[in-house]
Length: 218
Image (cartoon, rainbow, N blue to C red; front, top):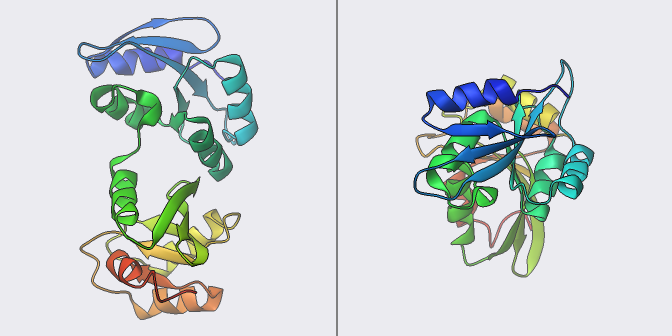
């Protein structure tokens, strides 16, 4: 892993934040209205990913840090899943700046898209709980029905290529459905429906998914 603290410090200055470089990949960030934040800065070499084992080691050696910023943002689904279990936010630089502005406790930060998805899901009476399984991937526990693993996408127009990319990128999740959460999505092309049909994984709009959680995909 490379040292990206100086790059992050410089980019934070452009966004109005001052920071102090500490040892062991740590950065102390000052804020005007919220408490200071200690983050771990991880720079990835070419072809490398930030994995669950990396996070597990960091959590053991830096329990006081609530945010791990990964540059570039190549984070495995298993690392996202473990981060939720440990109560740590793992994300790229863009989400770090959002967390610094919006969250008193940056360890609890979620992206705006994930916040929207979780809000809609948790306000459905059939949903018992939601567990994160990856980047925009969840296991939805339902009352009296089997849990569903879903992958969400905010695409306005879901192409067949996008379907294949999702299936490839989320193969370890084994999703039951692909859910399109963009409210402007009115339907799907024949090619995208055929691509999903060949894989045996339905694609569905978010509203339709929520409306049928208690009757479909049992």
